[in-house]
Image (cartoon, rainbow, N blue to C red; front, side):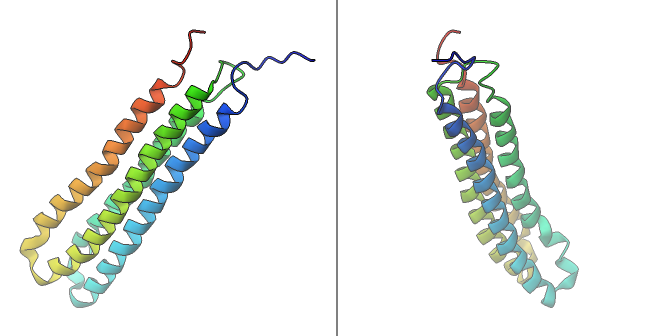
Length: 166
């Protein structure tokens, strides 16, 4: 039997890379849904009140930020997977998988919230301008959900590599 330089669990990187993919894919799904849903509201509102289009673009921008959160976690995870340089165990793979899922699913849910609130909010803002501040506050709280997922994802990702003393 030939000796290899690899130490650790051979299937562990699969779970780590799955976490990186999950972070990016789910966050981008949330960003895409939020952008599309609130963009439909902006387009519909722009027919009646074109002067409010630039002011109503806020939900689209906030939805786009969700994809950046997933990208950050995916880069953190993928740079932490180098089984040739350091042993990579199942604990590490599961830590990276949970990190990616935490960030990705939080981004997906925040994107859904931003899309629904953004669509209804910009339409309502066209009829009653006093609703703008309330809409922005709701959007901020929806964005905070994704930020919580990003923070938890960073914490979980930092746990990788602490399974055994090498």
